[in-house]
Every structure is written in structure tokens, then in C-alpha cells.
Image 1 (cartoon, rainbow, N blue to C red):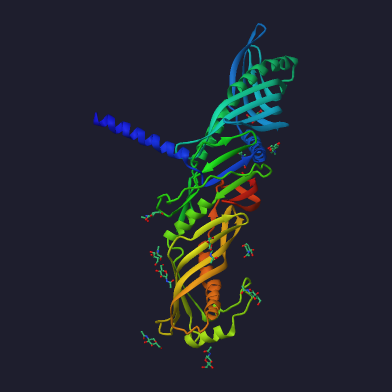
Image 2 (tube, rainbow, N blue to C red):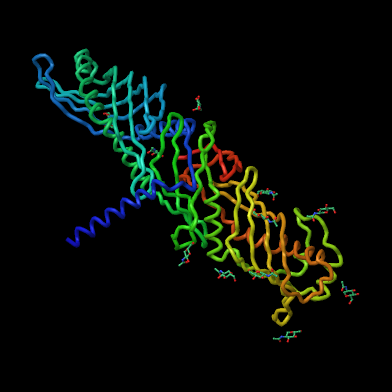
Length: 477
Ligand SMILES: *[C@@H]1O[C@H](CO)[C@@H](O)[C@H](O)[C@H]1NC(C)=O
Ligand SMILES: *[C@@H]1O[C@H](CO)[C@@H](O)[C@H](O)[C@H]1NC(C)=O
Ligand SMILES: *[C@@H]1O[C@H](CO)[C@@H](O)[C@H](O)[C@H]1NC(C)=O
Ligand SMILES: *[C@@H]1O[C@H](CO)[C@@H](O)[C@H](O)[C@H]1NC(C)=O
Ligand SMILES: *[C@@H]1O[C@H](CO)[C@@H](O)[C@H](O)[C@H]1NC(C)=O
Ligand SMILES: *[C@@H]1O[C@H](CO)[C@@H](O)[C@H](O)[C@H]1NC(C)=O
Ligand SMILES: *[C@@H]1O[C@H](CO)[C@@H](O)[C@H](O)[C@H]1NC(C)=O
Ligand SMILES: *[C@@H]1O[C@H](CO)[C@@H](O)[C@H](O)[C@H]1NC(C)=O
Ligand SMILES: *[C@@H]1O[C@H](CO)[C@@H](O)[C@H](O)[C@H]1NC(C)=O
Ligand SMILES: *[C@@H]1O[C@H](CO)[C@@H](O)[C@H](O)[C@H]1NC(C)=O
Ligand SMILES: *[C@@H]1O[C@H](CO)[C@@H](O)[C@H](O)[C@H]1NC(C)=O
């Protein structure tokens, strides 16, 4: 009785998990368009050509009656010579899967033959030409229980309109008559073996898909969950995949205390691939990095490096500031500590991604005997925009200082005017804190893709609530 209740309870738990999943919005969306599929199928066909070329077919023997004469024959060493796929297409079956079609294909094979009758024995070579080959394969695309993409073979049809066999070697008309008898078994062999081979290939690809990890390690701090949360949605012109898209601190898969807002990819199909990266993704990244302490930083740099102009801050420091700090610290190295007090806030608007980092900042100078001399401390709020680039299938983010607000809690230096402090602080942020944070983001965020895929000229577009990446791709076998 108790056991049964336990089971029922477990079942309800499972159901509720399932219901939760149905309700959840994705943090990441992937769209593969017809253009992407066309490209993929083109690459796939090249692969298939190579594979048939490499294939060694089994030899087979049988017995036939030729008029009153019984003979035994063997066909061996069947190898493909040429193959043409003039009409090949891939199309989507809305709601179900993918249809691959090859029409009017032709191929020639070489084989060795031998025959044996009570009267003669002979052997030689043969050329087998197939033409008017039509193959249609349908497979379903779905999600397995671990959230990975899965391909399920559904159906395969094959028809071969013409098989021609030409013998060489046993050069008599008898043998060429015999050639006619070889057509049937060759056709039967192909009918029996081609579709099962295709089925096997799809099963192998499915097995490969299921070895893909849904968790992708970013660096020592964080990992991304790329599992599918829904079954792939197949329409007439594209496949949409909804991925979880949560960034977790390394070794802690607790979901963040917020959920993704729904968003829709624009109805575009001129790139092969679209990736929609939600604000949720960036927020979970911010929380993960915060929990991992990535925004708590301590750095020590030579005095002069804080006062160096940079590309983005060509303005020279107000001379009084340099003097003031120099007089106080005797140009000893400066140490900065920033302790973030909350996960940086992220906002994705049309045209930009901005962050707000809050924390407690302290500055010291490092004396020659390694003891620290306090300079000042206070609460800091920094607003940045994010510069994003894609390289090697990773999203790289670097922060650019926009504004900051500082409230001084303690100071060793007498900054007679607030503008002097702000001028010094802007140096500290530009040349100290922001580069240190960017250094922690330097590894980049791996985007969902397969190992052999390379993005071609990806374009980034900031939309309300999500980042859209449009790209073509190149696949190397
Ligand atoms: C893109 O979608 C439009 C309709 O939305 C369709 O007419 C067009 O053929 C599609 N283009 C490709 C390359 O699939
Ligand atoms: C076919 O064989 C060649 C040479 O042995 C090899 O380089 C290639 O990878 C093979 N292709 C496939 C698809 O197995
Ligand atoms: C086919 O026959 C030729 C000539 O007898 C022989 O050299 C060759 O090795 C055979 N090929 C195969 C694959 O059995
Ligand atoms: C795991 O992450 C959650 C939320 O991000 C946090 O509340 C929790 O303290 C973390 N647990 C550990 C063991 O770090
Ligand atoms: C980062 O600094 C804050 C504020 O001092 C502290 O509460 C937090 O524990 C630190 N985080 C880590 C991971 O060290
Ligand atoms: C740089 O100087 C110019 C002119 O003095 C000023 O308008 C601008 O705001 C300054 N920029 C920064 C980042 O301080
Ligand atoms: C720095 O010290 C020099 C020499 O001791 C003095 O002349 C100057 O006024 C000081 N500057 C500031 C800004 O305190
Ligand atoms: C380090 O040097 C400073 C000034 O030179 C001195 O005030 C301080 O006591 C020294 N600290 C230690 C631990 O020796
Ligand atoms: C600094 O922030 C803390 C909370 O993080 C707050 O208690 C304190 O009043 C703030 N101090 C100033 C000067 O703003
Ligand atoms: C920083 O950004 C936040 C949110 O984007 C905004 O509410 C706040 O006003 C900004 N702060 C400053 C100092 O610009
Ligand atoms: C943005 O990043 C790219 C690539 O790292 C860099 O070339 C560019 O200068 C950056 N833009 C700004 C404004 O920093």
C-alpha cells in the first residue's frame, strides 16, 4: 500500500516536472533555416558520395537457370566508380521532421563475376550502371529525455528505373546474355540493402547527437546549460529550438531566482542560423559570476599606469590630481579592492546592453615594506555599456565605462573639490577596475554549435530583451 502511494507520488512529481517544463520560457533560441538545411544537405551529400566510394560491398553467389542450363555465379568486389546526384533536396515537414529526396541519380559500379556450369567456367569484370534512382528519406527530429536533439528514422523509399550490366572478360555473346540475368539480383541487392544502410546511418548520427554535452564549461567560474526545453518546432521554412540558456556558477546547478521573459525571433530566413540570446541569459551569467566572486577584485599596479591615457580616455588627468595623489603616496604602487555588493544589473535595450555594477571600493598605496597606506574608500555604482564580438563561435563581452556614482565614506587625502576625486576615480576605473573585470570575462561565452561548424560573418543586433545573432556557417567534415 505504502509502496503504491510512493509510486503514485513519484508519478505526480514527474508530471508536475513535465508541466513546469512546458511552462518555461527558453533563455536561448536557435533557428535553422531552409538555407542552413540546404547547405547542410549539400555537405551531407558530399559525405555520402565519399562513403559509398569507400564502401566495400559483400560478394554474393546464387544459382540461375539459363534455358535448360543451370549455372552458378558469384559477383564480388563491387565498388562504386561514379555517382551523380543532379536533383537533391531537403524540405521540412511541419510539425514532424525532415524529408531528404534524391531524384534522377545515377551511378556506375565495377564488379568481378564468375560463372560455373557443367560445361564452362569463366570469370571477368563487369560494369553496372544504375540510372533513374529515386530515394526519399524521412526522419523525425525530437528531444530526448535528457534535453538533447534526437533524430528518429521514419521511412525510406527507393526506386531504381534502370540497371544495365556490361561484362568484359568472358567475351562471348553467351556471357552478355547472362548479363541480363545479373540485373535482377543486383537490383534486389540494392533494394534490400540501401534503405537499411540509410537507416543505420541516421541511427549513428542520432547516437552522435546524444553524446553531445548539454552543459558547456565557460571557465573556472561558470558553465552554460544548453539543453532543449521543448521539442523542436518545425515550420515550413525553419526549425526553432528552445534551449534553457542558463549560466550557472561552476558546480552549482541551482536555478536563479528569476525566469526568462518570452521573446520571439523576427520572421527572418536569409541567414542559415539565428541565435536569440535573452536578457535572462546575461542576468544568470551576471549572478553566476557574482556568486563566483568574479566582481570582487584586488589589483596592484604601478602608480604611473593609473594615470596613463588610453585610447578611450585620451583626456589628460588634471595636473592637480596627479600632484595631490603623488604627494600623498610618494608614487608607490597603488592597490585597488572592489567588493561587489550585488550581482550587476543587466539591461538589454534596442541598440545596447548596459550594466550597473555596485560595490565598495578601497584604494591603498603599497609601501616599500609591503604595508598598506589607506587613501580613500566609498560606495561605487558604475554604469557600463558592453562591447560584444563573436570569434571562434564564442561571444566575447568587454565592458566600457559610461558613468559612475561614488559616495566617499572615508579619505586619507584631502580632495578639496569633488571634481578632483572624480577625476582620480575615473583613472582608477578606466585603468584598474574595468580592465580587471574584462580580464575575467576574457574566455568568452561558447555559443551552441557543433565542433566542426564555423560561423561566417556573424552579425549582432541588440533588440528589446534579447541579442540576435544572424550568421551563415561552414561545416568541415
Ligand atoms: C523565406 O521565407 C519566405 C516567406 O516567409 C519565403 O517566401 C522564402 O522562400 C523563404 N526563403 C528561403 C530561402 O527559404
Ligand atoms: C574515404 O577514404 C579516404 C581514403 O582512405 C579517407 O580519407 C576518407 O576520410 C574516407 N571518407 C569517408 C567518408 O569515410
Ligand atoms: C577483380 O578481378 C581482377 C582480375 O582478375 C583482380 O585483379 C582484382 O583483384 C579483382 N578485384 C576484386 C575486388 O576482387
Ligand atoms: C548556488 O547558487 C544559488 C543561486 O545562484 C545560491 O543561492 C547558493 O548559495 C549556491 N550554493 C552554493 C553551494 O554555492
Ligand atoms: C565578494 O565580496 C562580498 C562583499 O565583501 C562578500 O560578501 C562576498 O562573499 C565576496 N564573494 C566571494 C565569492 O568572495
Ligand atoms: C574630454 O575632454 C573634452 C573637452 O575638454 C570633454 O568635452 C569631454 O567630456 C572629456 N571626456 C572625458 C571622458 O572626460
Ligand atoms: C606637492 O608637494 C609639492 C612639494 O612638496 C608642493 O609644492 C605642492 O604644492 C604639493 N601639491 C599638492 C597638490 O599638494
Ligand atoms: C612600513 O613603513 C611605514 C613608513 O615607512 C611605517 O610607518 C610602518 O610602520 C612600516 N610598517 C611595518 C610593518 O614595518
Ligand atoms: C554605502 O553602502 C552601504 C550598503 O551597501 C550603506 O549602508 C552605506 O550607508 C553607504 N554609504 C554611503 C556613504 O553611501
Ligand atoms: C545605471 O543604469 C541603471 C539601469 O540601467 C539606471 O537605472 C541608473 O539610473 C544608471 N545610473 C547612472 C548613474 O546612470
Ligand atoms: C569592441 O571590441 C572590438 C573587438 O575586440 C574592438 O576592435 C573595438 O575597438 C571595441 N570597441 C570599443 C568601443 O571598445
